[in-house]
Image (cartoon, rainbow over all chains, first blue to last red; front, side, top):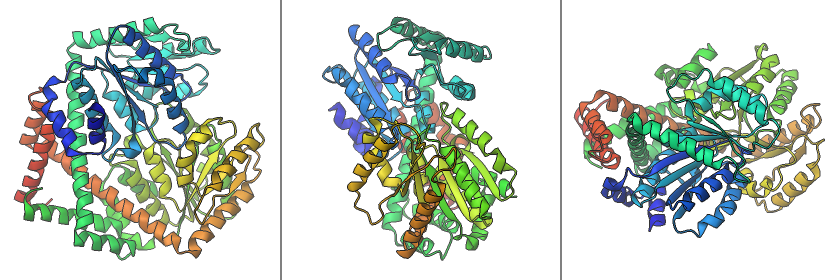
Length: 305
Length: 305
C-alpha cells in the first residue's frame, strides 16, 4: 500500500496527492534526518549503523535514498541497496530509492511528499539520504529537521574550498573513517572553519568509524541535542513550515509544467510554432513569448482546467 | 559586452533574451562540444589540452564551465579556474563559469542560451564542461553536438553499473591517465560494453594522457569524425533543432515560474493561503490546488501579462 502511494507520487498521479491531502492531519510526528556526504565518505555504512541503533530501540524508520541518476554514481547506489538488504526484510524499515530520472515533476517536491507520507504511516524517523552532489540534493537536505554531513579524512585541499557550502547545510558533522590517516588534520581544519560560525547552534564534530560502530552513540547524542535545540526555540515548527511552503511551490511548478506539456502536445498553434523553431523560421525566444501569450489566452477562453 | 549579456541571461533579465532574439540569425555556426567525466578523471587538464590544440589552429573558443554548486565539488571548480588562467588572458578564449545556484531559472535553459550567444559572437567552438553528476548535467551534455566522456582507470566495479548512463550520452570516450595501472582493464571492459551498442555510430575509445599531451591528436580526430558523421546524415540539424525545442520549453517554464513567484508575492489571496499552510490550517496540497485555480482566474480577469 505504502509502496503504491509512493509510486503514485513519483508519477504525479493526482490520486497520490489526494490521499496525502486526506491524511494530512496525521503528519507532524516523524523526525526528518537528512544525511549527505561525498562519495567515499562511508555514508551508506554509517546510515546502516544508525538504522541498527534506532531499530534496537524499536523505532519505525523510513529511508528515502535519493539517486541523482548520474551515470557515474550508479555503482554507489547499487552498493547501498546491497548493504541495506539486511534491513529490507524488516517490516519496520521502509526503504525507497528515488531516481530523479523517473520523477516527472522534480525530485525535490516528490521527496517532501514522500516524507509526509512516511509520517502518515507512522514512521518515527525519516532518513533522507543524498549523494551530496548538485543543487537539488542540497535543497533536499534543507527539507530535513536535522542535517548530518559526513566527511572522510584525506580530502586534501578540497576542504578549504567547500567551506561555504557545507556550513550552510550541516547541523552535525561526522568525521568518519576516524582510524585513517589525516583524521587529525581534518578535525583541525573543521575547527578552524567553525570558529567563524556565528549561529546559535555550532555544528559539533563527531569522530566515527562506521565499519566497527565506534562513535555511533556520540553521533546519535549530537543529533538528539540538535533536535532539543530546535524544539526549545520553536525552530522545529518554523523549519517544517518552511518545508511545506517549499512543497507548495514545487507542486505548483509541477502543475504548471504539466499544463504546458499537455498544451504543447494537444494544441495546433503550439505545434506550428514548434515546427517553425525546428525549421529556424523563428527563434525559440520569440516562440516562447508567443506560446506564453497563447497560454494566457487559452486560460481566458476556457476559464478552467 | 559579451560578459554583460551572459549575466543578463543568468539573471533572467528579459533584455538578454531580447538581444538573443534580435541576433538569432547569426547562430548556427559554432560547433558545440560537451565534455563530462567523474571527479578524478583529469577532465580539466584534458580540456586545457584541447583548448591549446584549437588555439594553435586559430579557432575562437567559448567555454561554459557548469558548476553544479555542490558543497563537495567546490575544490574541483577552483582547480579548473586556476588551470584555465593561462587561457584567461587570451582574448579569443572566453571562459564563463555558471553556478546553478545563481541561475534563477534553471541552469539547463541558461546554458543553451549562452551557447547561442557565444555562437553569435563568432566562437568556432563552444565547450560545455560539466562534472557529470546529476540529471541536469546529463541534460546539458545532451545539448552538445558531440559529447566526450572522460574515464580514468581504476574505477573498479563501478564501471559495470554505469553502463547504461554513459552509453546514452557518449559519442567519444577518452580513456585518460592511460599511463596508469588498470588502463588495459578499463579498455577491455569498455570494449565489452560497446559490443552491445546497436547505433550507427559506435563511440571510439581513445587513450590519452592529458598531462603530457599523449593522444590529443587522436582524440581531436575522433571528435572531427563524429562531426562528419553527424553532418553526412543530416543529423547535426536535427540535434540542433532538438536543442532549440528544449530551450523553448525551458524558457517557458522560466516564464511560468516567474509569474508564479510574482503572484505569490503580490497577491493577497496567495499570501493568505501560504499563511494558512504555515499554520497547518490547510495542507500544502490543498493550497496548491487553490492557488492554481486562482492563477487561472487571474489570467481570465486580466487577460494579459
